[in-house]
Length: 221
Image 1 (spheres, rainbow, N blue to C red):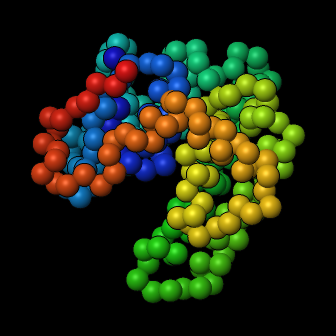
Image 2 (spheres, rainbow, N blue to C red; image 1 turned 30 degrees about the vertical axis):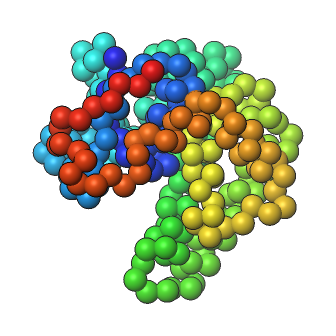
C-alpha cells in the first residue's frame, strides 16, 4: 500500500492522477496548509523541505519519497505503468518531466505569486513571469502539434506532470489562444477518468476542523 500525503495543488495532483491512471490502490492523507501541517516535526521527518507531496511505500520497508517528479518516477518503476520500457521513449519521458519540474512549474508558480497573491501589483514581475509561461506553453504546443503525447505515441508520467500545471493557465493569467496542439492535449487528457478523479482529491482548502492531525485517511481505489 502507498500512503500519499498531499493537498489540492498541481504538484499534489500529479501523484493522485498518476495513481488513478495506473489503477492502483493508495491511502490518501490530506495535509492541511491552514494548520501548517507540512511544517510539523512528523512531516519534516519525511520531507525536510516541508513540501507536499510525499509518499510512503508500506510494502517496501516504509520507504519515503518526496519531490513530485521523483515520486512519479518511483511509481512508474514500481508498477511498470506510464513509464516506457524503450530506452529512447523513457528518455523523452524524463526530458519532458524535467521540463515541467525545472521550467513550467516554477514559472507558473511565480506568475501565480505576483498575479494573484503578492500584496503589491509589480507589473514588471507579472509581465516577466506571464511571458515566460506563455513561451513554455508554446514549447509544449510545438511538440503536441506533431505528437499525441509528450514522449510520442505513449501516454506517460510526463503528460501527467505537465498537464496538472498547464491546466491552471487561467489562474496564472496566461492565454493559450492560438496553441491548438496544447489545447487538444489539455482537452483530451481532461476526459480520462484517472485525470478527472485525481484532481478531485483531496478536497480543496479543507477547514481546520475537517482534519484531525495525523489521523484522517481515505482509501482510494
